[in-house]
Length: 279
Image (cartoon, rainbow, N blue to C red; front, side):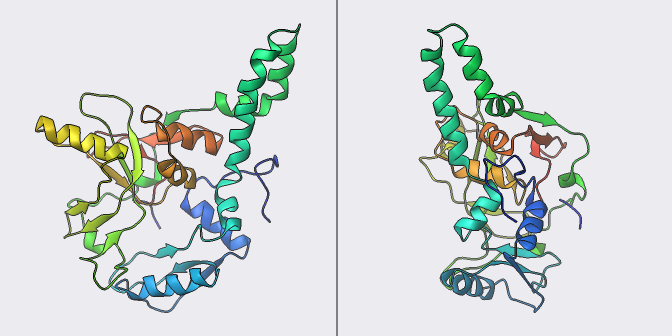
């Protein structure tokens, strides 16, 4: 747990926000964030305010005083095309350049120096590919505070509908690995809070986490799960991207960031943790 002017993807000045706080600074500087000091109730009230603001095409909202919790809540981060670009740049341009390189290389191989010229033109993209992957860091914001035993009721989870069974984590990054080894999966699955130490998981059976859970259940084994709140916006986009099952979402997050994704370790988890996550 942690303490306490728009430019496009093609512009060399563009740097994707590295974590949630970085994104909030970017939105604040761009006039895309409203900070609410009045106390709000996480049961229905926050969600209703959010619904009205997003319907009006309004800004992101940072609620500073949430009843029953010491933590803040942010909503509507990606509610407009402008905020999406502030968070992610224009990833479709990155994909376009990658596809173009793959298409041009075979033709370039037939001419003298063709491959070298093609690679030189794509040097910016190749630089990103060279920085692809993850890197371990020993000191990480996510390890600043460790609550043991956990206190999930301290988190300001929201209840959105009167018929909901309770409060939910609505945008958690959920990481699993298949029993017996293999590529990990980063997905977004709603989690309902039951008490201080227990949640229910809304697996989508056709997605990677659901496949991992099914395999573990059939073998009679428990499935370790790591859930993160916050972290690099690139990880959120990667978690919802329709990638093939054998392509790790962490690699796509690294590609979108333009740098290696920072991870760390803690004895409480068998998984690598996202170093810059909030929780």
